[in-house]
Length: 168
Image (cartoon, rainbow, N blue to C red):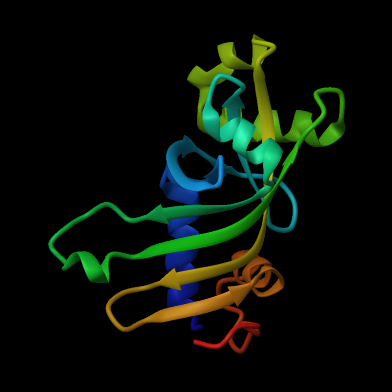
């Protein structure tokens, strides 16, 4: 991966407010839309979910999930649309823990209108920790990253020569 692709990766994850969340639902794949935020720390994302949503129960039953973020469609062919798919492990945060407070603050900084949902007892803050990622930075430009390499590129998009950990 190069610095330009890393900047695209950061833009996708910092500027796009929603992602597609893939979960395992009763043994079948399921996809839903979730607002997400980058959490403070090395490399993690947060979603705020209700127990009324099937994907919340799915994550409780099977914490491995997938999160896809893509650029706004434009003039380019759909195959060239920049996007990143993250394989993540989900962990529900305890309301009385320091990670919860920091996650809530980050989430509300991005989605202030969600403040009311943090008052509801059926909502949970879920930390999504990347295991790997696949970035499509345009037609014919795809990069595989392990979780460590993803964290490196997100921390420093100019990290020339940072390891990918996965073959192209």
